[in-house]
Each structure stands twice: as structure tokens, then as C-alpha cells.
Image (cartoon, rainbow, N blue to C red; front, side):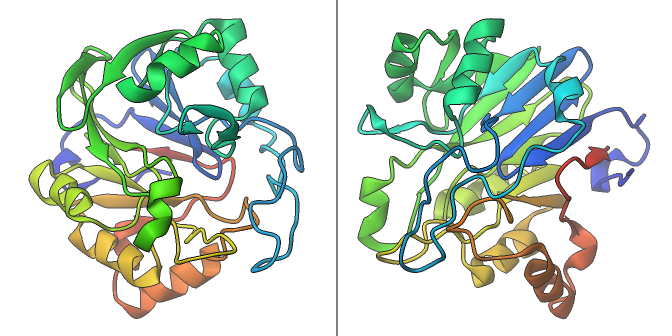
Length: 277
């Protein structure tokens, strides 16, 4: 699928985004294959995230797509948006880094970029942390630059218990810029990333995850629409239909975007889809 974004119409199309499942994807740019938030375990390998509000099905709800193995073999780097709550292994965000993801990264000794506050804990698990990031402080990476954007993992008091992580703004040389929202609700920092950094592509966590208590820990539908409306370029919606606490479906999001004349700005990929820019 080729969908050139606003500033890219006269450039050669070569960047690819391989959507695997939920928040896990691979950004392919020149010689780099950057794995984002590796949840690589089999269907049902993680306990439910909701037991009361939603049917307590084990996660992930679906297996990785058949083409995942071949692209995972090419991975050169990794970005982790958030990991443990309070640095406690038992409270790991397994939908962004599960046991299979850890094993994959250890065995390949994959260079990883993540928030500085998570780095020491992840190093203890044998992961190769090469880049430690602070919010709004650009760092060189991939012959380009990366900036960590604050992510607020929930409305109301619940975000204090969710280990809010980061989104990432990536600039590859000669390629479209990308903003990965990470697990966040819509905030002033998210709006700043969209309006000041002006990403050509924005990857939006769209599942509206909600636990058994409190308000959503990801953007609700009105926030998703605001995100797409504010984004200067194309939006890719992920974090959909793979976890038992994420009620928003692809069809619901598609219909809402259509009703608000925003569908032309968005991609809602199926697991295994490859988007070329």
C-alpha cells in the first residue's frame, strides 16, 4: 500500500511500516528495521487485563500474523515505550514487552532505546540498552534523531499506577518523520508533538483500553478524533482488537472517522499489513 503524505510527494517511496499486532510494529528505513514494543508471545500467553468490565479472555487475543517471522529476522534495533510499573517485574506492561519479546531481544543482543528511568531495570534482565532518553531532549539515533514525548497512561488518578511512559518522535535522514504516541490519553504534550514537531506520520494507540476500575487508560473516541484532526499528516491506528481490555474495534473507529470526514487522513491496518511511504 502506498500513501504519500503531504510533504513527501516528490520523494522516492521507500519507508515501510510493518504492523504486526496491537502496539507491535517494525519501521523499515534504509538499513534499519526498528522493532517497536515487542509483544511476541503466542495467543493466550498473557493473563487478562480485565476480569469484570470485559470478558476475561487471555491475551493476546490473536496470534502474530504469518508474515511476522520473516520480518522479525531482519530486526536491527528496538524501541520500548514503557515497561515496568515502579520497576517491579511482576507489574510489567506485557502488552509492550512480554517474556517472548525479552527472549528475542536477549538472543539477538538487539540495541534498545528507552526512557532513562527504565534503563537500569531492563539491563538487569540482560537487555542491551544503548540509548537512554529524557523527555523533550533530542538524541542522535539511526543516523537521525529521536525525541521522547511524555505519555500519560490514563485519565484521573489511574495514571499514577500505570507507569506512564513515552511516545517517540523519529527523524530518519531523507525519510518521513514519525511520531509514535505510545500508551497515552490526549494531553498538551501530545498536541505539542503534533503541532510543533509536525510529524509526517503519526502512529496512534487507538484501543481505548480500560481496566476494571476508573476511566480509560488510552484515548477515548473523542480524543482519537481530535488526534487525527490535529495531526498534520497521515495517522496509523494501532493497539486494536488484540487485548481483552481494548473495546474499540477497527470498524467502530473507521465509522467514527467517516462520520467526521477524517477517514482520508487515517490508515487502520490489519495484522500483517505493510504500509509503504
